[in-house]
Image 1 (cartoon, rainbow, N blue to C red):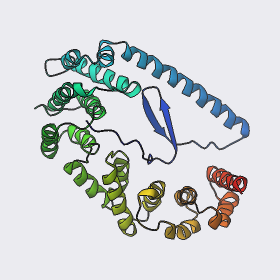
Image 2: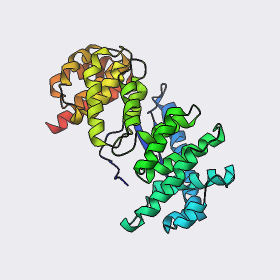
Image 3: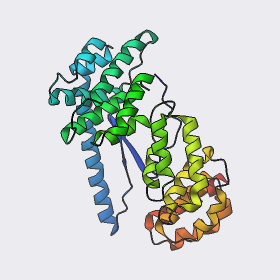
Image 4: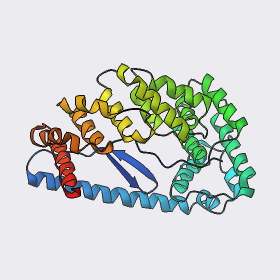
Length: 324
C-alpha cells in the first residue's frame, strides 16, 4: 500500500471547491450588467452553494451510518468482502461502492501493518469485480467507476493484481478501459501501461490537453517530474490553440521543470487573447516576474476586454505594491 503524494498542484486554474465528500472543480463566472444584477446573481449562487453543502452533508451522514460505513470505520473486513461481488445485485454493488467512496473521502482508513493482508485481499476482490467477464454499460459503468475509485483509495494493488489490471486494460473495449486507465495512472510507482498512456497523450498534438488533466492525477512524484519535462521539451511543437493551457500548467508546476520557462513570457505578454492574458497573469506570479512585466500587467488592467482579467491584473499590482 503506497502513500499518496499530496504535494502537487491541481491543473485547473480556476476554483477548486471542496464540498462534503469530494472536490467539485469549476470556473469562476463573470457576470455582465448592472451592479444590482451582479449582486443578485451572487446571492443566488451563495444560496445554491448552501443548498449543495446541506445535501452533501446529508449524503455523507447517511453513508457513514450505513452498514458499509460502519464496516470501514471498524475495519470489519469480513463485512467489506461480503458487501459486493458477482453474487450481489447491481443495486447492492452500486450502493456498496458509492458508500465506500463517500466514507473514504471524509474519513480515510488508516490501516495497521498487521491488516496489510486483509487490505490486499479486499483489493484483489475489487480487481476481480472490475475485470469480470461481462459487458459493462450504463449504470453498471458508474458502479465500476465507484469501484475503481475505492481501489485507488486503498493504495497501489499487489504486483499480481496490477498485472491483471494491465492485461485487462489492453484487451477491453467497453467503458472499463477508461475506468481502469484512471487506476493505472495513480499507482505508485506509475504502472508501465499508465506511463505509456500518458506519454502517448502528452506528446500528441490533439490529445495533450486531456493528457495534462490526467497528469494532474499522477501520484508518483518522479514520474510526474519526468512527464512534465517531456511536455516542456515538446512545447514548441504543440498547436497554437493549446499552448496557453499547456504553458499555464508548466508555470503552475515550475518547480518540476528543468529549463527556462521565463523565456516564453515576453511573447505571452503581447497577446490580447483572453486565454493568453489569463495564462500570462498566472505565470508572472508563479515565476516571480511581476516587477519585470509591470507595464504589461498595467496594460491588461486598463485595456483588456475581459473584466475578470482586469480585476486580476489590478489585484496583482496592488499585492506587489503592498509587498514593496
